[in-house]
Length: 435
Image 1 (cartoon, rainbow, N blue to C red):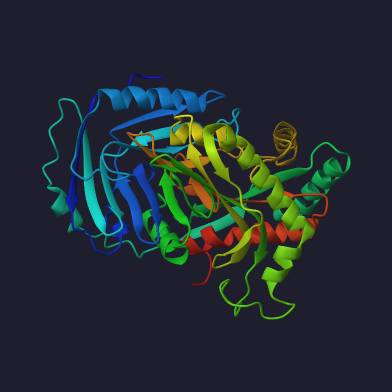
Image 2: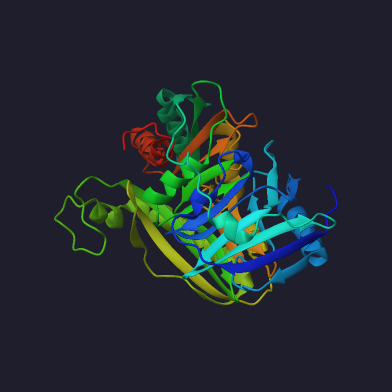
C-alpha cells in the first residue's frame, strides 16, 4: 500500500440550484465520477487526487489506516462545516475477502455538496500543486449538454443463464432442508455492452436513477453505479442508523401509496406483511444488524415489526434501527462490523458465505458490499451496493446484479422473477427498457 500524500483542501459556500449531476463534465473518466444523492441533496464529484486499493480480510482496516494518515497530514480550510464538507473520501468494498476485485477508497479533486438548502464546493490539490484556475462559482455555471443522451447498449447473459437460475435455487433449498443454513442470499448477473465498442458514460445513467428512484441513495464510486434502498449505516453526531430491507414483492400499476388504506385482499402489501417466507427473511436480517451494532451502542432501538417501503417497481419490508454511539468507531469501522448482513449473505454467516461461493458461479466483486463516503470526523453514510452495475476495466461494458434471500419456503421460479424485477432499475437507467 502506497503512502498517503499530503493534501490541501478548501470548502467554500456557494449558491447551487437544479440538478447537481448536470455539472459532471462529459469528458471525465466515468470511473472517476463519485456520487451520493437522495432527493436532490448529497454529493457529486469527479477527478482523483488520492486513492488506495485494498483486498483480503484486512481490506477495511487497511483502508482506514490509509485514510487516517491522509486526514492527519491534510491542510483543510472548511468554511462550511457540514457533514460532507472538508476532506471526504468515497469508498466501495468487495463483498468477499477472496474477491479478485479490489476495494477502493478515493478522494475526488472536485466535490459539490448540498444539504437542507445549503451548498458548497470542495477542491483538493496535493502539496505543491497550485489551486485550480476556475473559481468554484464558475464550476456551478457549467452544464453537461450530453446528460440526456444515452449510449446504445445490448444485453447478454451473465455467469449463469436465467434459464439455469431456478436449478441453482433448488439446490440452495436442499442445503437449507439439510440444516446447513437457515437462509442464503444468492445473486446473478447480466452483461451490458456498448453496441459500438465505445466507453459507457455514467452521468446519464446516474441522472435517470436519481430521477426515478429519488427515495433511494444514488451512488457512484470507482465505476460501481446504482441506486440502493438499503442504508447499511449512517453515523452523524454520535448517532448511528441502519435501514434493513428484506422481503420483496412486485408493485403493479395502480397500487395505492403505503400511506393509503389497503385496497382489498389483492393488495400486495397485505401479502408482504403476512407472508411467512418474507417475514422470516426480514427477521434474519434485523437480528444480524442488531447483533453487529449492539457492541458499539449504549442504546439501541430495534422496531418490533417492519413497515412497508414503496419504490417505483417493488415493495420491501423495512426496519430502521437507531443507536447512540459508545465505542468511538468511525462510520467505516461500523460498516465493516455490519458487513455482511443476513440481507445480503444469509444465516449463519459463515455457512451462508460458503454456500454462496459454491452455488452462485461468479465473483460478486463489489456488488452487495459497503459503498458510501466518510468525512474527516469519521461520520458518513454507507449503503449496501444493490440495484447496481459495475463498469468494466476497459469501460466498454457493465455487469448488472440482482439477488434474493432464499429460505425453506422459497419457490425457484418466483426467485428468478424477483431477480428480473430487481434488474429493472439498472435496465431502465441504461435505456434498455421503455421509459
